[in-house]
Image 1 (tube, rainbow, N blue to C red):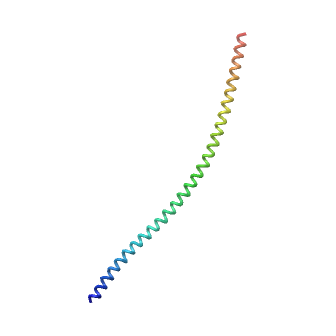
Image 2: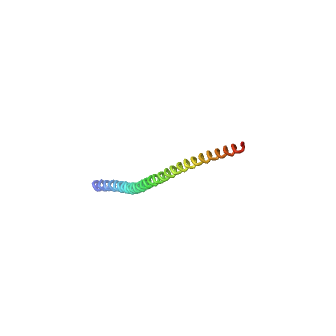
Image 3: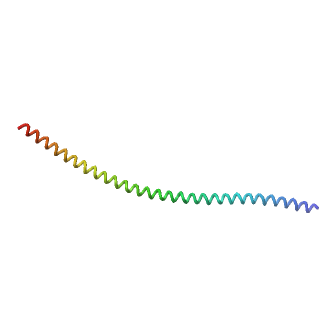
Length: 101
């Protein structure tokens, strides 16, 4: 009788241990699922980062080109302005000289 009681206690203990192992297994499965989900999110974020970096490079290249064009235009306009200013000064000088005569 004592042997049966001991075996029953042992069976109860083993059953409790099995329940704990099953709970831990479920937790492990949940964690594994979360890990996979996080890996997928990470992959998507890395892809987005790469796309944004590529887009940024394209935009920067276009901006640099535009800035260079604006610099050239500014220099051309400045040069024309200086030429026109010199021409206007020469005309004023001619007018003044004609007035003096």
